[in-house]
Amino acid sequence: MKASRFDYHRPATRAEALDMLQTLEGAKILAGGQSLVPMLNMRYAFVDHVVDINRVDGLSGIEIGGNVRIGAMTRQRHILADPALKARLPVVAAALGFVGHLHTRNRGTIGGSLGHMDPAAELFGIATLLDATIHVESKRGPRAVAIADYPQGYMTPNLDPDEMIVGISLAPPAEGHGWSFIEFAQRHGDFAVVAVGTTLAFDAAGKVNDARIVLCGMGIAPLRLAAGEALLMGTAAEPAAIAAAADLATRQDAMSDALASERYRRHLAGVLTHRALTEARARASHGKVQ
Amino acid sequence: MSAVSIRVTVNGTPYERQVEPRTHLADFLRHDLGLTGTHLGCEHGVCGACSLLVDGRAVRGCLMLAVQADGAEVVTVEGLASAAGLSPLQEAFREFHALQCGFCTPGMLTTLVQLLEDHPEPTEAMLREELSGNLCRCTGYAGIIRAALKAAPLMKAQKETAA
Image (tube, rainbow over all chains, first blue to last red; front, side, top):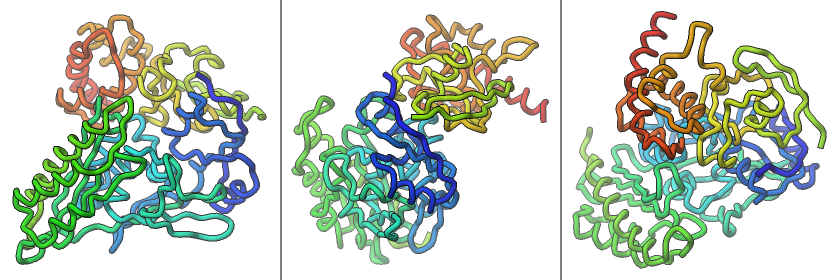
C-alpha cells in the first residue's frame, strides 16, 4: 500500500525541530523510519506533518561514563559495532543481534525504537533491564522520564505531542557482571514472541549483589521479574536458585495473540529465563579480578 | 501537501526531480526514473526485495522516503554491472543458479554488496543468518549461499587491486 499524503519538514537544528513540534498540528517525528514508514505505508498511521530529524546535529553518539548515554539518533548498527560499549555492556550488542536485519539496523535508531514502543522490541527490553532514563525535550524545557514511568499503554509512551526524545541513559551493573539476552522468534530478525535479558553481578564472596531480569513480549511493555531478582540476591546463583527464578517467570501474566497463547508465552518465559540466567552466571567474574 | 525538489545521484547519474513527500525511494526509482530493476514485494520492510544501496549501505527502498535521499548516492541493481560485463557477484549468481523467478535477486545482490564488503571472508552460517532479511521462495537459498561464497574472494581481490 501507499502512505496517505503528508507535508515534509527537515529541520537543521534541535531548536527548529522543537518549534515545529509545538506549532504543527498532527506532526510526527521521522527518525530512522523503520517503524513509522511501514505504519504509514500500511495506513495504520496517518499524519499531517512529518518532521525528519535525520539532519539535526548533536542527536547521535555514545558516551560511556558512570552511566552510558546514547543519543536518540544513534543508528542501531553503530550501537552494535561500538567496541567500548560492547566491552562495558555486552548485553546491548547481544540484544541488537536480534533486531531486524542489516538494512533496518543501518537506518533504525534507538530513539525511534523507544518512541515506537513495540511491546516485544529488544531495545525497549534493554532500556527496562538497564534502568534507563529517557531524556526528552520540548520548547517548554527538558524532562527526564524513568523507564518505569514511560509506558502509558499499548504502544503509548509517556511523551507529549510537542516532545522529542533526545537521548537515553543506561545504568550498567558493575564491571565483570554476567549477562545474557536470548529470544524465541518465528524467524531471525522478527520481533520476539518472548525475549529474556539478564545481568548478574557478584560480590567478592561470590554472592549475587545485583540481579536484573527482563521479560519481553509478555504484555504491553517489558516486565522486570522483581521477585526473581530478589530471590537471586545473596545466593551464588546456583542451579536451584536459577530454577526457582525461572519458575517465577512462568507465573507472570502474559498476553495471547496470533503468534502465541498466554500459556505458551509463560512456558517460553520459564525456559528462556533458565537459559539466560545459566549463561549469565557462566559469564560473570564472580567477584574475582579479571 | 507540496512537492519537494531533490537532487540525487543514482548509479552515477545525477537527477533533479520534484517528489511528493509520501513517495518512497523504491517507487521514485521505478516510477520517476524508470529504473524498474528494484522490485517491491511487501512495502513494509519485511521481504527485502526492494533492498538497494544508499551511500554504500543496504537499506529497504520502501522504508526510506525519496525526499530523504536528497544529496545521497544511490546504487540499484542496474548499477552493479560495468561496461566490461557483469560483476563477480552477478557472474556467481548465474554460475550457481542463485535465482529462479528472479524477484528477490536485485535485493539479494545489493544486500550482498554490503555484506561481503563488511565480511570479506564470510561463513555460510553468517550468510544464512544475514540473508534471512531477504525472502527467496524459489531457491531454498542454497545457490545464493554458494554464489556468495564464490564471489567473496573475487570481490576482495578486486577491491585490493583497485586500492
